[in-house]
Amino acid sequence: MSELEKSVIFPKGEPVYEHFTGTAYLEVLTKPDEVSSVLTGNVTFEPCTRNDCHVHELYQILLVTGGRGYYQEEGKPARRLEAGDIVKIPGGVKHWHGAARDEWFVHLVVIEGRTEWHEPVSDTDYEKVNSGDYHIP
Amino acid sequence: MSELEKSVIFPKGEPVYEHFTGTAYLEVLTKPDEVSSVLTGNVTFEPCTRNDCHVHELYQILLVTGGRGYYQEEGKPARRLEAGDIVKIPGGVKHWHGAARDEWFVHLVVIEGRTEWHEPVSDTDYEKVNSGDYHIP
Image (cartoon, rainbow over all chains, first blue to last red; front, side, top):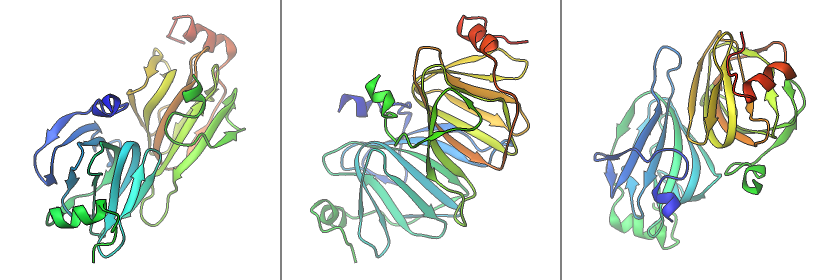
C-alpha cells in the first residue's frame, strides 16, 4: 500500500479539488503542445475516491498501473479494474472511474479534447457498485 | 529483475524481430481505430537491446516504467532513463532508445503516424554510450 500511496511509478502530483468525491491527485506528464495535442497524466485515487460523471469531447485511454477500482458507463454494469487493465473511452460516452472503497487506485490517462462534467456518483450508487451490485440503472 | 522480465505491469507481449539489435518485446495496448488514432503499447528491452535509428511522422511519447536505458537524438548526448522518466519526441527527429548494457528496460509508448527506420546503432557507438561517453558525434 505504501507503494500505491507514492503512485507506483510516476509522481503523485497535486490534489485535484474539482469534479471528484474524495481525494485524488494529478500529475501531468506531457501537456498538449505543437508536438502533440495529447495530454498524458497520472491520476491517483485515495480509497473511496471517484470522479464525477463526465463526457470526453474526443476520447480517453486509461492504463491502470496499480490498486483496484471501477469504470462505469451510463446504463452499463461497472467494470472492476486492476493493474494491467486498459479502458478506451469514446467521445460522447458518459462515465465515471475511481478507487474501490478500501483500496488505492492509480491509472495513467491519454486524452485529447475537452471534458464536460456532470453530476457526482452518489454514495448510494457507489456503495452498490462496491457491494457487488455493479449495475446502476 | 524478475519483475522487469515480466514487464513490470503490462504484458511483455511478443518478440519484435525487425528494427532492433538484441531482443525486444511489444504488447499493443490500444490500436488506432475510429475512437482514437493513437497507438499505445508496452515495449520491453532485454539488456543490451536497442532499436535502430528511426524517425516518427508525427510524434512519440515514452513513459518509462522500469529498468534503465538510454534515449538519444542524432547529434546530441544520450539521456539516461529510469522509471518515471518521460520523453516527448517530435516528428522528424532521428533518434534511438534502448536498454543499458546490463539492465532490462521497459517503457510505454504513445504514438501517432508512421515510423521511418534507418541504420542500427553500431556496437561501437552503443558501447561508447554505456561507457559514459554519452555523445555520439
